[in-house]
Image 1 (cartoon, rainbow, N blue to C red):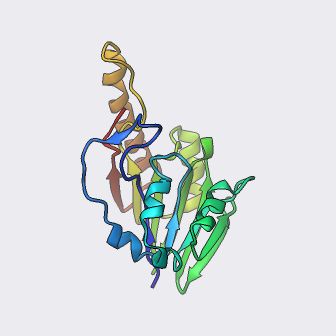
Image 2: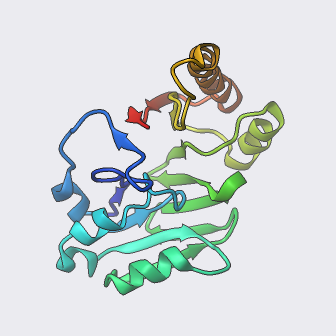
Length: 203
């Protein structure tokens, strides 16, 4: 049986410029049982060295790290230095078989982000996290690449700075735009179910 963990940061990130609004406990016991870790991109609220170092060494020695193929392998080399069992590069749109009836396909996206299609037991999950894929042409191309989707994981929140208090119009318009992007993703990809996510972060 294969188990994926989707990590998030413990504490703050971006040189103390970002933090979660809530202090929900991090499920380290669940993370330590994972066999594979996938990182969508290197932003500090997704790839957290502090979180990785907190995983018990014996658990890291059993885990495999998956990440999109890059020129410098910085993220994967760092994970190897922490004693993870294996680090695996995911070429753009290539399938990787992880077990019986369990495979993944990674798409590299704008700005160093990526999405992951997981096909397990006949069920198809697409994780778009905060991957920038918003215009109609990009969504059309994505729908063609991934095919039918049982579950879509995508954000509906704003994941970046929204100006100063006096920037009222921007601060009001941007959340509405983020919800519209989620609506268009659902319309283009037509998933059976959508699992919305939000950063609930402070800047």
